[in-house]
Length: 230
Image (cartoon, rainbow, N blue to C red; front, side, top):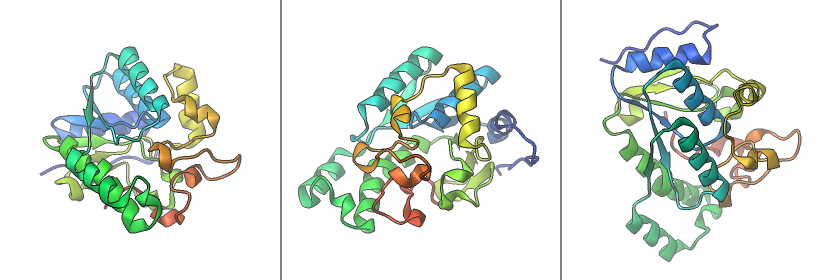
């Protein structure tokens, strides 16, 4: 049975990351979207000498800038990135029957698109893993307030889910990124605090919530793609 370690209130992201990887007692990988949070975690893991894998979901609708930072990360850290793609037949059927922008017509349609392009590939990526790491932070969304630093992911086979940056603020993330001079997506400097698929992401105005630019036509409580179901 997987053991969930106790985490103290003053634990650092490095503490959480190390304890989580050790507790998984098996292969652990980071689900990487190449956000600043994810690259920070890669840098921390390398600094700590932790052996973790890195995988990414290529939805077929990512920004060019995301591929650029992925290439920079692979070069900087000499890391092999395992890319997972949606099933070709499912994408073709969706676009033939509902067009290219069906996800803007209803929440149901958007969930369908996210399931095809993200959730199903994630399931394949997690097969054989004892744990996975995310860049989730509590302040990012109203849907993430009840997360814990290390938890049991019952939806994905009962493996460990490690959220080392959960309690960090955006300022803390960027302070680390700047101090370590890590590769970052240049869209962040253009007003994109949260970056997903190109048609579902836009820049936010100063003072707006970071997730305002994701699925901006939906209510805040719906702004998840299904990767982090509980």
